Amino acid sequence: MYDEGGDAGAAPSGGGMSRFNLEGLIPLLLLVIIGVASLNYFGVIEVPYLPRGSSSKQVLFIGVPSTGERIVLDNLSYFLRYNQRDASTFGNAASEELQQYDIVILDQSLSADKSVTVGLGEAIQKYVDKGGKLILVMNSGVQQSVGFGGLTAVDAIGWKANFGNTMPSECVPNSVSIPSCKPGQEVSVVGRIYRQDYDHPIMLGTEMTPTLDEAPYAMTTLAIQANEGAKTIAYIKAENTPQSFPAILEKKNFPLGNVIYFNYDAGLTMNVFKNTIMYLK
Image (cartoon, rainbow, N blue to C red; front, side, top):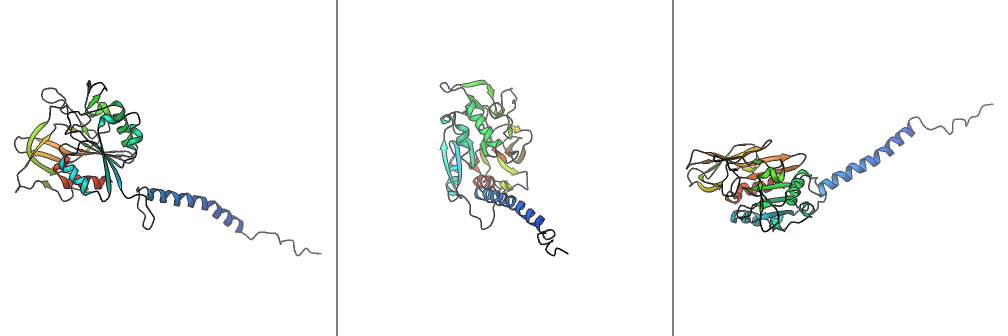
């Protein structure tokens, strides 16, 4: 009279739900694992015991390195490789070329030509906006090349004309109403570089350089100011004139882009320049 097998096909209470939850979590877990492994491989994060991509950082130097800069780059050859190019050699593919590098250094301070083309200026701005790391030295890139026989646009002087609001340095009119970053407006000073941001790793181990028992630097600088959103890491205090100038500035660009500006020959302070590269890498 009774069907003893009537409950034989019933699923155990909760078993189906547990299997469904597990099957739904597996794809999510795989995505997380793949994402973490990819970030580790490309050096964005570091996860112990996971293999990484090439450990050599790729650096592009646009311009001519000073003796001190070259020494630092050569000494860091155990983890970086650098290529040197002139700004005039970039064409329409500049943006794609810059994306191949972990750090770009724009230093035309030893060159008479301080110009970049509109295309290169936009490519550098896009590079930083996408998370690129840039080191800018002195008045590099303050003029705009028009591409004809070395001519530059007379109405485009300063970094904002070429790079928008990307750079931490800002060119301002000097006492005779000439842009302070324009070639020919450099200021020769005898002085020392003092640390202002005591938490920043760039100046780690350097409170003041040179120390008071050493002769001060004879250097060339610019009467520029920090741009909106920039941080002053160090400053120059002149001893031959009652003036101070920004020495090192930083401006971070959301989400990962970063620009460090040197208002003097970066190779003059080789340890600081080395710290900067290690910080950006």
